[in-house]
Image 1: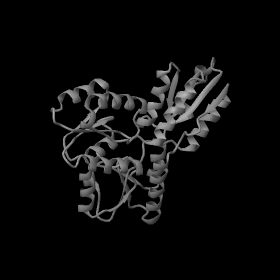
Image 2: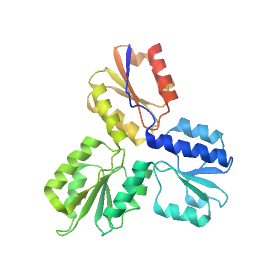
Image 3: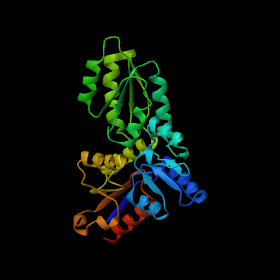
Image 4: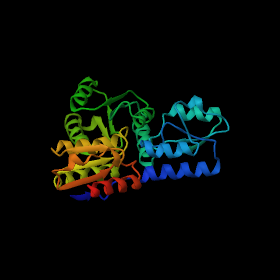
Length: 283
């Protein structure tokens, strides 16, 4: 069986930068470092930092004045930033630069009270943070039908700002944007907030799906960008497995597979991808 590995699998720039900042914080204040929410969506990485004494706070209220709190790569809501400052914790902002840019763009574009339409997962921590930067009404949607409902409900003289969670599906967002712009013209401002790393991974997955008999996607199941890679392959009719480690792979599944594709989410360490590739080669 031959393994075709995606070139862009694994850590993106934002994840690598966030972990670098966390490492620096741990070195500077061992035993007194916490993250507000999971720093990234990968359980193996989180276990490594837990072993180093890094706590995961579930609320800004859990912070303490002599604690260093690292803001996760997904960013946090503005109210949580304010709460950490009020408590007196030392805050290290490890928000992905692309997410930070999206936050600022949303704040500027909605400063006049325009309604924010955000394409994404309403329960995702990044989305909760992005919404907090909108000055006017805010709505999260996930389908074309929901986008149409938002358009129809907008007042005749109303204006809206269209943006997306940075790890969302680029082709789907482009299709939604095209339809909305055609119907609304200058009443709609469109922000380009989908990350280039996300776009590259998704395009590469589409190419791989046309060349392989099955695709293995490596990453945390809580990772939205990882799940979308598996969905893209499945949408092309290719059997796709989402695994967190190589131990989850069963030889029987690959008994009739000649070529298998291998990719990974933006929060998956290279060491885990390497281990999965070796297990596939062992089959």
